[in-house]
Every structure is written in C-alpha cells, then in structure tokens.
Image (cartoon, rainbow, N blue to C red; front, side, top):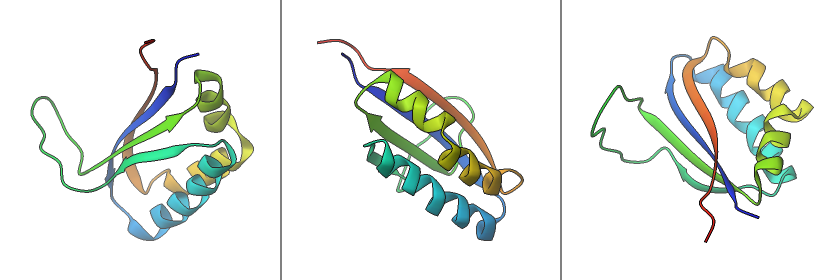
Length: 97
C-alpha cells in the first residue's frame, strides 16, 4: 500500500490563533502516526504563487491521511486556523514502488 502525503502551503496572518491550530494539529498527526518531513524552514518559490510556510507530512496510507483530516481532533484544531491564515492543503497518494 502506498504512503500518502499531506502538503500544505500557508501564509500565517494572525500568529496567536494559528499557534493553537498548530498545537492541536500536531496532536492529531501523532494520533494517526504521521511523520512531519518539512514544516516551515527555508524555501525558494520556483514557479507560481507561493506561501511563506510549507509543510509535508507523511502517512502510512491515503486512508490514514484522510482519516486524520476528517477526525474530530483535526477539525477542532482547524477552527483556530480559520481567519488566522491562508492555506492550500492537498493530500496526495505516493507512487508505488
């Protein structure tokens, strides 16, 4: 079964509530066995519109990634992000070996 990746491009506009989002989302990621591969850090926007914060999170499966996103834990955290940033999030299935 291929892994899945949660890819987020974010611009934080209100740091205080966004911090609450990040804390709650981290707990949801732990519950679903996610591994953070990139979170923030230096980036170079090569094409298209970019955001200052880029995140890549690995899950064991597409099912686990979707379950995490739809979980009560993540949805509660997401409520803190609304109005605190601009986010583009996609969940993509990894390539099979």
